[in-house]
Image (cartoon, rainbow, N blue to C red):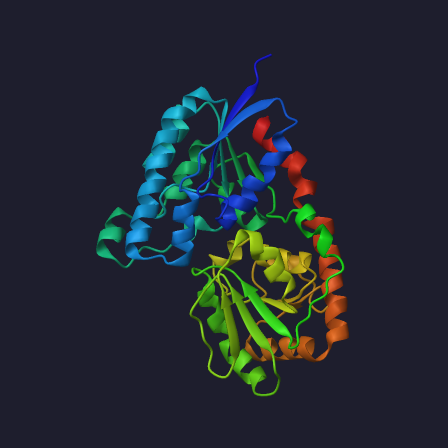
Length: 356
């Protein structure tokens, strides 16, 4: 019997968080399946690293050109595969010509996305706005055979254009976090931590005043992983570059993990991956009550929710000053994540959705 052939088209290399957790971490589970597969990332690892570290205009243009070129090349490979797995759109904002070509040339297409990518606002730049297509994602969804999303909020949108929508949440890999069960740090001062990227660092403005307020009364370190050159007056801030091989070590160096967000259509579509990482690493967390965060966190039990500056101060102050309770909340968070949000629990569903 002829083996099934699958072409995976992640938007980025495994350095990109979305591509890593939505595709690359599942690939090892395919080794026992009777299939052949090929992976063509939109951009190279080296370009991905440059984009995350210093996204200059030149790097952004190079990034998008590379993505367009690799996806165009993939479109000509598509007819030779039984299934094409398209992870996120090719060119944000623009008419999805390349994606539509992939759909036209392919026998079967599965489209996966984990952000409200259909909500991108019209660019202020006149040239960009001229080429902007607000219906680009809808156009892709209509032509795909299946759609995989990370939560019910995104599924509600996808179902307007496609009848075969499957919810597979973004998860952590149990094997990565298994050895972190007995967590211990040698922090001389408590560490409030945040892990993300340059593009999401803007949300730290939400907690800036709360951290300033707390720093007047307590000694702590605010450790930022994934964004550099950030400072807050009166607060001891440490910035570190995100590294894949270092991320677990950085996570367990936190005593408290935070995920501040504005409440808008874009953030409501987020998958809560930051929270899952904190909780899996046995770190007590505080997050804005937005989107899936309210499903992951039971306030005061396995984490805390903070809707405004006063609540951010109160929740962080409690965790800073009550280390025993902090450990209890962290343990509850870890138990919850390892029961409901580990990749191993969804691997079979993901494989079935992709193959059948």
